[in-house]
Image (spheres, rainbow, N blue to C red):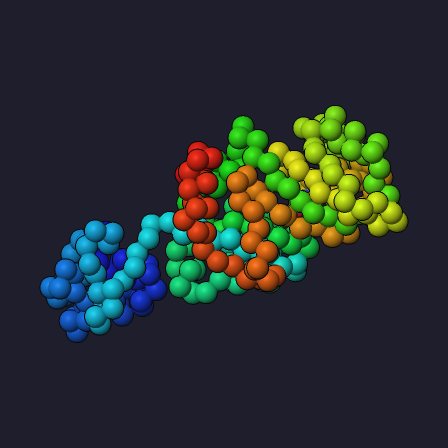
Length: 239
Ligand code: URA
């Protein structure tokens, strides 16, 4: 990769500003000053420094966010705040995007990455990746609903869902439940409950495939995946 592109991609300035840094002798590759913007470097195996500080380059970034309500799962929007707007600039420079969508009012686990293959595989209908949601439901959730979800239910557009594993945590006028589904149809959890005449009033994703929401993350907070979590994704054959 060209040194000027590397530095610009990592957010050290525009191509023009980066050219000036190079001209000023601020950049070294393996302890040798590099002034030529066209010089190619291998940022993983070579030691690139800017004013003496090593530049850390990674091809892929993997972030786990506890998505807050009121924010769109999109990369950009002209009017509304997106999950990418919540990232530090040093993370935004990797051009990450959310893996799939949570509704604007849904909270919880959102994976954000620039690895298109990971996203494609995790979202592939062929992979049947389980996603578990915690929800508060208006109305009494019953064993009938558990059975109905187990058999699959018909959504408002006629789509017949795959089985969902519904666990009642608390039943009453308001019920707490956990639902695991292996599909990702638009508003799926809300529409599954609509199909049995009930309404989701709060929805939070707790897990996706092998990843579990880190419960120390406050709403809107995020962190990089840990090595063990990346290993889990590898074992899951999505990266
Ligand atoms: N199902 C929904 O209805 N909404 C979400 O955000 C995720 C799953």
